[in-house]
Amino acid sequence: MLEKMGNFFDNRLNGYEEHQLNCIDSANEFYPFTASCLPMEQSTNLLDLGCGTGLELEYYFRLNPTAKVTGIDLAEGMLAELKRKFADYKVNLILGSYFDVPFGNALYDAAVSVHDKRMSK
Image 1 (cartoon, rainbow, N blue to C red):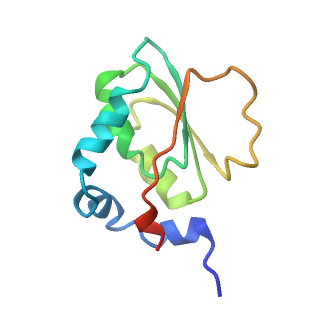
Image 2: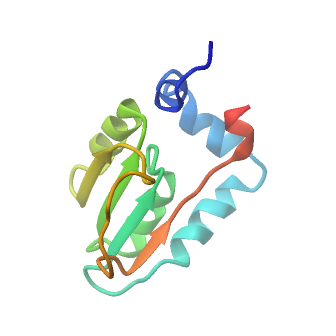
């Protein structure tokens, strides 16, 4: 039986960040680099597709603490962890598929999506 994607990631929530940061080559350089490529203007509206626990947001909010982030993910547990970690920032979270949510036009200054193909094997 196939495991639904949201369940797949929720079932791996414990240890997910450790895996991403310690088992993936160059992760400690990649996440800060990704954050540095995002807009730095005050109150930037950022869309994070498949946001998970927001690993790149950890670095981004250090660079741009006034950013407004909309994150969407299929995994409820991942969203709960992101919400807990970034409770002091402007974060709007959506449980669902970014293929199914109408985001409108020209609402965001940038979009980001980070995925490690090895996590889903």
